[in-house]
Length: 204
Image (cartoon, rainbow, N blue to C red; front, side, top):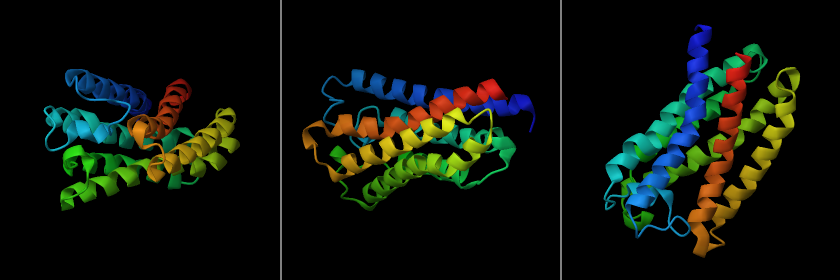
């Protein structure tokens, strides 16, 4: 692939979290009864949601497509591709799972009753943890590349924080602020995608 293609893929990683946040906020605004603090993001795409088609096309699945694009340039841009491919593969798995989240949509209130709703829950879980684990498998490659050595500690910090938030979210300890905890637990690894993509644009 040419340099311009890699830069395009890096740009996909830059816009992925931004576009996803915009869709979430816009759909929440369009539904005055929706509460970002207490409700799951997937409820915006549930079977009974008024704008489910938007969430399940340009929301979650598009995020997955853009993350997969980011994975290819991530493998190329760090240490000239001379490192473990497990990190980028986990990013691809995460992106693919996000796409499936938009195909297998959640039941009303995201209470898993149907088979489709149960699959949705598992896909979201895989998408989240695959993206959380990816930075751990990038640490060695980052440390060996002079252009990326400063991002070694950053990636480790983000990964540890993301694990803590994901555990907190999945334990459902703070049920009255479930939506907020979910957004933070997904937002932290997406922040890693954002920062890494911006750096990739600079070094390519």
